[in-house]
Length: 205
Image 1 (spheres, rainbow, N blue to C red):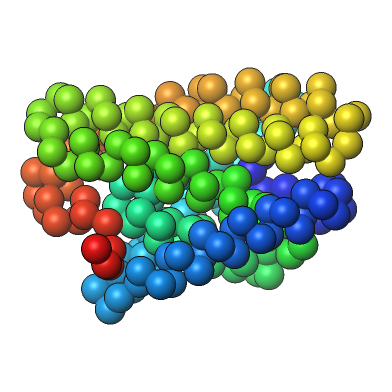
Image 2: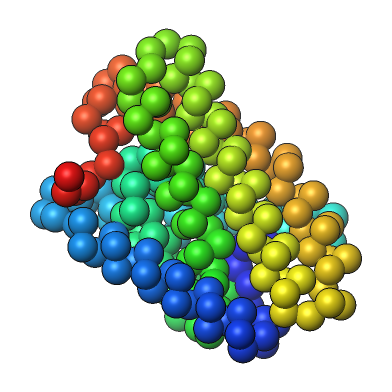
């Protein structure tokens, strides 16, 4: 599960993850403009909602994250959307943790931002089935990236977590396939009905 609770990670991992996440959020805020606020809020609310629904899988559980979709539509703004969603979940429902807020933001938003930056331009230029395939790759890549980061921070925190980290990473594979299908479907629909929605909102170039 991407929501790592308090008391699991070591101090160096918490501090390092927090610093990187803060830098990403700062970049998102610097690029944010009035046009981006509504879209960021909508995607943050969508993330907040779908990630509350966990499905048991082996010794852990998984949930939708929409990281690839947020990366495509928001770019750096995905970091802000995820931070707000995670903060509300931690305060309102005790899901995740307060001390791990930075690491969890990095784990979930980071791969989505990377997928959006790498594949977003190609997705917006593509047409037909190729667009859907690229969007699916972005969705799956974001999930697998999150799984890799969650496994990494666990392994870096304590060697005893390494076997668990490997199992956690394996559970993200079926989730990646589901997110690939969802991301491809949403992006294809938006491309037909509202192409401007696929432009990173508020990007100041």
